Length: 309
Image (cartoon, one colour):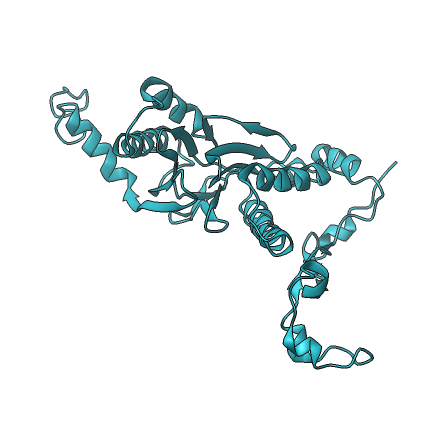
């Protein structure tokens, strides 16, 4: 059966068009709003009361006019592969050690062969105890991880305590399962600290959810794994963990053209908090520092005879 693709010419195709709201009383019955108590039951909410509402579920995404969205995506990959095969690249990594979880990321954003930015923040600060990394489609990662942040806040209002890291990761995994096959592009590491200490999860757009000690995600992940597998130890100190994370990212950016910019490093403690250790370390400068540490001068080629001289 032929499908009419003319609807994709609309510039608003695929955008979230509307959001619904829910009163605080529905989300957290134990909370009493003074402004609500002053209004008679038969009267509608005033504008000031609407500002006290919390946004809840009710996204209205504009999708293709077909009942089977998954089958549509499969046909789209055949008929228009460039619309779904995103040219993306990044390097993100995280690993557990005795003092918590160390997260290190690069900062390059690419559009195919074009480098669009070297200052992208690929660690999403979900709340005061949760962090998420960004690999794949930037829009998908940012939107859904911020949505999980809202859901965590709603859970806290309802129950009076924060959700665990495992529960928060299941929220995101449940969303990915609901939209599986819809064309999302996301590979994120979810880490945080709760009453059981720091923990680390990997979640992607296929609703895969893995609990692990060490992950490297993105086009440069293979190169980062080479450094991590060689030098990783669980009993590392914080300084050793930071140096390992920085070296792994720097090595990946040197070999992967889609990774680069600066290195950012976060530390998730075992006591319910996270800290930003390094905000901007230039990877090009790191390469020369690592070469110097090996006893090389400059870029390591001064003592090599060139065939072009």
